[in-house]
Length: 99
Image 1 (cartoon, rainbow, N blue to C red):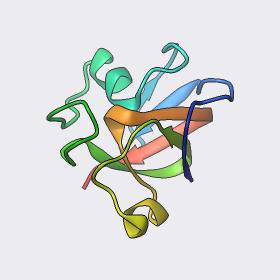
Image 2: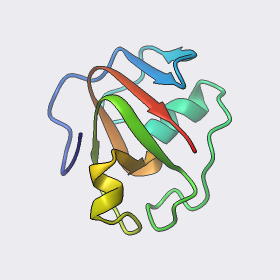
Image 3: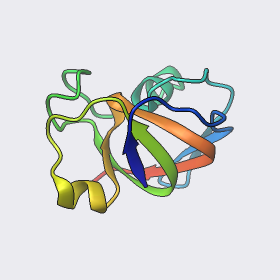
Image 4: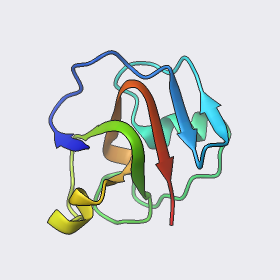
């Protein structure tokens, strides 16, 4: 599930990319893309502003709240897509996939 605004829940303890990699201990309010890149993962991105769709991923478990969206439509949002550069993970675990 996705939403707009500021993340208010506890930060996740784990972010899983395709079920393989776990990221632990990233700071609250850190966008998914920043957490992935800081962990050395090769995550796609372009502008880091939410204005293009290069970094878009799909949340398949957990929740991520968006701070900005200029590219996704209602269908994309309903399917769980988020721009990773603008998505703040919520809850204990967030699992994402690209493609």
